[in-house]
Image (cartoon, rainbow, N blue to C red; front, side, top):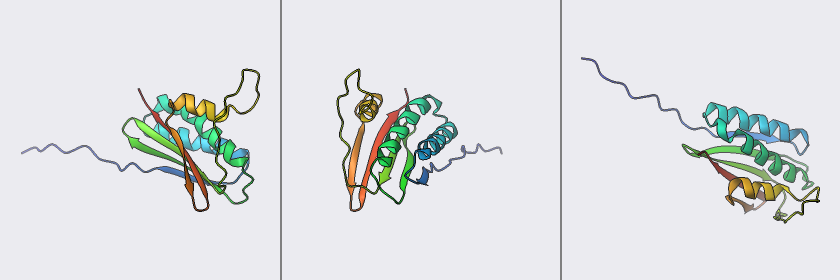
Length: 137
């Protein structure tokens, strides 16, 4: 008698990295996000996810913290992910409306646009986590 076997169920393990507060950390975070999205076969999210993680890491680098930040990518459904960056600063980021000619203050505006408003901030005892969610079409 031949029995059918169920497909292998692999646990969905989040990707996580502890990074220093330095400009090079944005590139490391992008590599982490790209690698995990390829692994999860969510290639269509790579460009937006790399943009988001770059902005969140860049904002964390501006806080002046001296320890480290934690970057995390979680698969929250089969077609959606959450990118989060935890830093040691309790200063909350602010969504500003940048004019066309402005060279700065565009980061969270881009995150807001790309995620269609699906981002937020969680205050913590020793810092905060800024997170953003993306969904594949």
